Image (cartoon, rainbow, N blue to C red; front, side, top):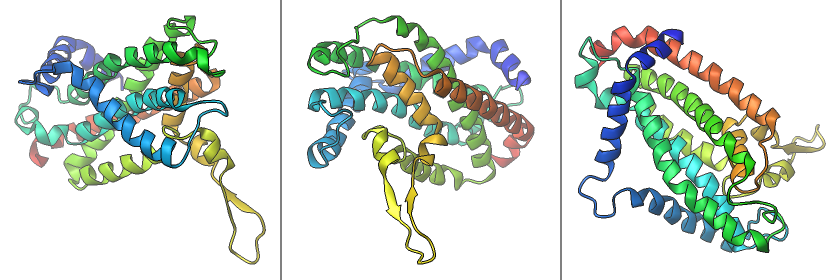
Length: 287
């Protein structure tokens, strides 16, 4: 892990150049440019609002209306989109940049970092929409009534970004190395991200998971199967919950969740970067 951090610091200018190149390449020739970073989450929001709010009548609070529900969903969608996009692209980054990786002098460890930072920049473009929308509707909902456009809790945003990037890059290192060894990894990640998304309270409140139960069918057993453990083992739930408290409620994050996520992020980064570095010598031959 330390070797990776030293390499990233040494090549920080190259990382910055790659991030800028990626951001420019996203919307090259596009009339609306970076505004698409706002449009995509909003389009997803309307789709999931139709399914979860209008059809299934999902609410994040007893008195919360469609506008407040939309803001809560949008905050989760922005964070999840940045995370999911990075995982998908980082998994295949070595294959897509095989011509660079096969050059001995090229530091391949910058590729997942470049993609994570690029996705976070796009996420930050959409955050003002969440903040302004939350400020506009706050007076009509008890959950949002005490929030401000700019609260002291906003100083936690750099910490949340740092932990999010650390966790995402660590997973990116693992998946990129696995994909170089076994190309089916890329397809499995697509399925896994989709399942992970619906196991995370983005479009529904966490109480749905906590209160869900299924009767045990075995005649020798009584009681119900519960699913609260899904939240206890889901780091993205901890992260999105922290983002929502900071952005929407003007509250400090739950430090227990944040510390838990921070510990997992550091461990994942350490494991991912170590595995990536150990396999790095084999990448030119595998690609």
